Length: 254
Image (cartoon, rainbow, N blue to C red; front, side, top):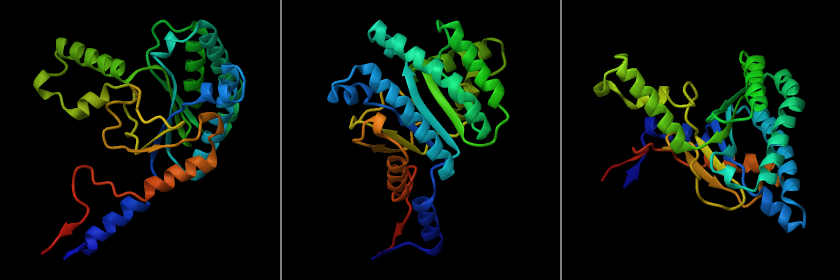
């Protein structure tokens, strides 16, 4: 027979019922959403911005502490120039129009990714958002922009290599914890839950280090239709799972 002792039962219950502290989302499906409706891809991106607003609001109301959105990957530069230009306009408009409201709701904004080669106006907007909201203690909203997981790990390795060259750290002393401190996400807990919309089931070079023990939920809903109900369903699916982190929740006794 098998059983869970009192301590194990309490641990299992906590694992099953806890709200994820950090939710990461791959926002996918804008183009297909538009195509199904006979609209240009730009329409899908515009409605995708509305989905961002709904989801950020819902995450804050649910009490989620950290929300990371995959806004623009380092691979997205291969898209048509006209689409990239439209995306850049939308990103600038979102920051200008929504920054004050996010600040009023105590949202702290951060951006991760490679700033090399970015438009100076976007870099300035990123800096403004960080400065204005840096002391806020509400939802921590991180946007991955011009971001790729492999590139992030390479940047961290370069920082560590430079630290080792200067004698600040010995190569033999480098641990997972030290590596994490040199990632773009340093100081932010790893995601508990990853959501990807539009039915695709891959992580597309997103948070490769940080997602090691995250729970994955793949939603068939395309990103422009995503909002509070879909976020709640994904969180409920997360809460119904037992997170073992490579160990055992229950022990069997014969």
